[in-house]
Each structure stands twice: as structure tokens, then as C-alpha cells.
Image 1 (cartoon, rainbow, N blue to C red):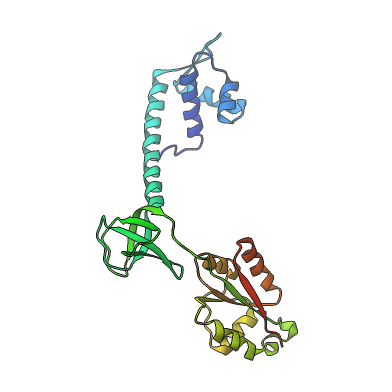
Image 2: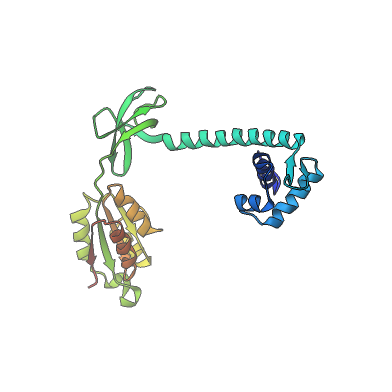
Length: 263
């Protein structure tokens, strides 16, 4: 690890600036370059001089890096470069490798096509508008690592049906029109991919109807995220909670409809 102790990076930068800008260097120049105070520069230079890495002169040549200082800069620069290379390798691998689910068995090097189905990315042999290369062997229905992604994945945003329930002050679940809710659910259930709930009244209503919610926390955010991935969502919300969902949907230009089921 480079620069383990506090202030080592600043000392390294000051040494490097002295080496780079000799012989016309001023403390003010270093302070402006590094974004620190002149006092901080002065204190660090004094410390570096005490350690024999900088010589403080007179006249035009204010500071001069010593051989010891040069060796220190070289060593730390090499360590910094090695660390940077490791970070870049990690980031490049992270950004360029993508997981998908294999529709078929694939071998390393195979070209595959990409499609989104109910919010999940799949690799397939059927041609689409996006393709990639298989990094490692994977069996059917396994997660497969992909590289060299190219093209655009065709994705139509989903829509949201919001069932607005009465608040507890309005009677809660006892004031809800269950026949209307059942009608809405029966009409939409074959096209709905996920169900979300907000509030205690929503939990009671879905429980009475035997509907199992897929999510109930951070529901507005989860609803938007799912709809953007092409899923259709049914959300049970209570009173003014509905507004927190509709605002999120409008910001993302996602289609929705609100069904008020208060008796």
C-alpha cells in the first residue's frame, strides 16, 4: 500500500515539484499547485530538509532536491504506478464483464446475443440488436460472464397500476371496495410481473385477497427500477402515499394509472 502515513502524499508531491521546477521555485508556486497553504508547504520543506532530502539555498535557487530525495521520489512513484495499475485492471475488469443467464450451453469465446425478459438479461443464440462474447464456459440456465458488449438491448418500459386504498382515518381496509380490487387484479394479473405494497392497510388488503407482494420497502424506487427494466407493476398504496410513487414515475416518464378503490 502506498502512502500509509498521514501527510506522506503531500511530502511526495512537494519533493516532485521541487525536482520538476528547479531552480525557479517558490513556496507560493507549490501551494497553488497542490491546493494547500504556504504554511503547510513551509513546514513540510523544513521536515524534508531535516531528513536530508531537500537543501535550502539562498538567492534564486531556493530549494534543491538531494540524491536521497530523488531516490525517495523514484521509489514512491514506482509504488504509486503499481498501485494505480492494479486499480485500473480491477476497474476495467469490473466495467467490461457483465453477467447474464445462459439460454443454452456456451463455451468460452462463443458469440451470443442479448435479450431482456421480465427484467432479467439473457444470453441466447437467437439474433437480437445486442451481442457479446462469452468469457468462460457456462451451462444452460447458469450465470455466464460476458465481455465485448456491443449494440443496444431492446427494452420497452413497463407500466404501473396503482390501487389507491383508503387511509386508516377513512376506515382502512374496511372502507375498501374489495369487489373492485378483485376485478382490477383479475383483469391485470396475467400481464403483471411484480406486486408492491405501501403501508399497513395495503398489507392487510393483500393478505385478505391472498396476494403475495414482491416488495414493500422503498416501494417507489423499486417500482421505477422494475418498470424501467420492462416489468409491469401493480402497487397497493394508501392515501397520499400514492403521490410519492406518481412523482417518481412522472420524473422517469413511465406510464401509470391510479385506481381509487374507496367505497
